[in-house]
Amino acid sequence: MSRTRLRLDLPAGSWLGDVSRGVPSATIRVAETIALDGDARRPADDDGSEALDGDGPEALDGDGSNVAATVLVGGTDRDRVEDALRGHERVARATTVERRGDGRTLRVVCRAPVYLPAARAVGLPMASTVEVVDGRATVTVVGDRDRVEAFGRRLAGKGVTVGVAATGVDGPDRTLTEAQRDLVFDAVRSGYYDTPRRCTLTELAEANGIAKSTCSETLHRAEGRVMRRFVDGTGRFDSASDRVGTAVAGTAFSETAAFDERDADGPDADDLDADGDDPVRSAATEP
Image 1 (cartoon, rainbow, N blue to C red):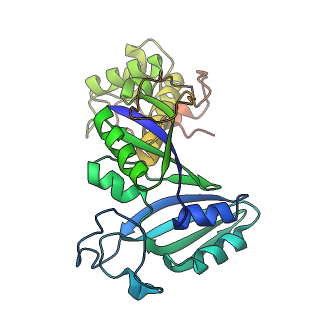
Image 2: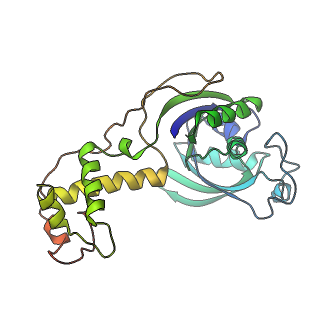
Image 3: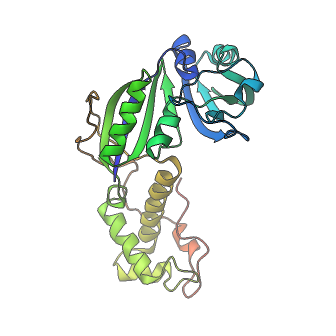
């Protein structure tokens, strides 16, 4: 299974494209989209367009392309972004949920961004967060080459210019370092992750000839990588600059270490696992 990061130059009329181009200094992240109740009462438009039948919430009733989106706004012009969202004809409502530091979170009731119906039509999973700056969206999709190409063709048909930022192989061997992978595999085989555990942290460390604290920290770093990848759906990519014609694939993938891989004995590692007992936690808390 391949993972592809794409650049989408959104067309005029797209609320995401229009708002971000109107406030190019802002960074807009669509973190979550949820279909609205009653969304399937009428068939979806054949072209998956974002056009509304009218203004206000009533315009979003049941045409197959309406969502409530969690939108995170960063940058110095957050008020302008809010005003632009509320004034766009394809946004029914934009409600501020949270203001914190340099960021702002809004709930936006709107037509689904143009990439969502295209991905749904070809059965292509997408990462949960899409970043948009100055009319250009960065999305990550996971699927075989044929589906990615079909996704690109659908978007091109809607006026979206598509470019490849990076591609790579999606797999656990690309998530962990060799040392982390070997230790995790041994931990699973030994029953360390079973409930109840059949192997303690001390036993696992002795079997691998490493200090208990080193074992704890290595497992914790590995678990952190796996969980972060699971939550945000993204891996590390090498940069690439292919422009999409009809094919999307071929760029080499390389995992860049996201963390410092030093193995160090920590004073609090021994507090986590008593010999012969089932430990409550598997690793020390990383500072």
